[in-house]
Amino acid sequence: MANILGLAVAGDHQRCGFGKVLLNEAEQWARNNGIKILRLDSGMKRTSAHEFYRAMDLIDDKDQKRFIKWL
Image 1: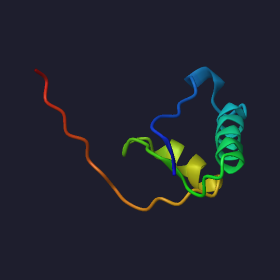
Image 2 (image 1 turned 30 degrees about the horizontal axis):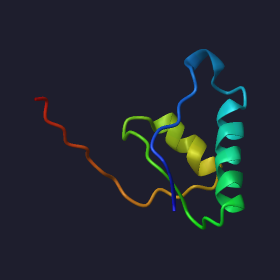
Image 3 (image 1 turned 180 degrees about the horizontal axis):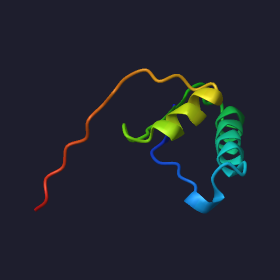
């Protein structure tokens, strides 16, 4: 499995195709390396990004919370 822990395009460059290129390159890299699953994490509030990921044929399979503790 390949994990994409974060994918973001600067606001003034969104809807220009950069996200599609990045995601397609990641998918191609995974295929070339024999990886069968591509997993991408995205913050729950990034709903426009979620629409993009669904349009790129990714399936949202669960909601998740992250917990941290400042030391």
